[in-house]
Length: 194
Image (tube, rainbow, N blue to C red):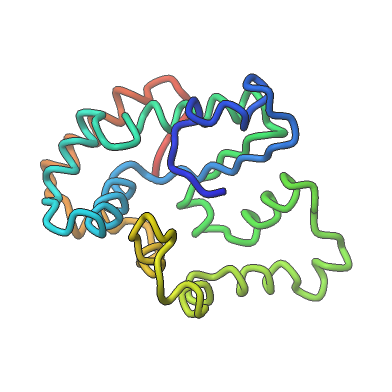
């Protein structure tokens, strides 16, 4: 299941909510890039949505998924409390070191790569199969909607797959404002963003 819901909205996903065998993988993104990604996603539903409006909502903590700092810290806390059930990963780290990220994910789901798999390049094969380019080119991801009741096009799930695109959308003043919020909300939490 793929969701953007805060961890508190899916209580059965953690041992505290009665979940035992469930595995949750949370991918945390640098907040400025997260805002850009969310804006592109939301524009599929509201094409005229100004970037400034979504940016202000993110800074105020009033996006559809609540304050991003609560979202990030909720999953981070769950990953610390239940490391066997919740894996917290950074998007930028996945881009920087995809091989190690796939290994980490494989271990988390209880399927670590064996030496026999590592040697012939199975990890690289998995990365190729799961690459943005490959997923984007698959026929089921090219057309149609995610759900007949929710008219969100499947191809909208795939955009650039890069880090740092916020620089193409935010003014320096906007970036400073977001950086101040990040510094304030994540001070002493152990979470840092690159």
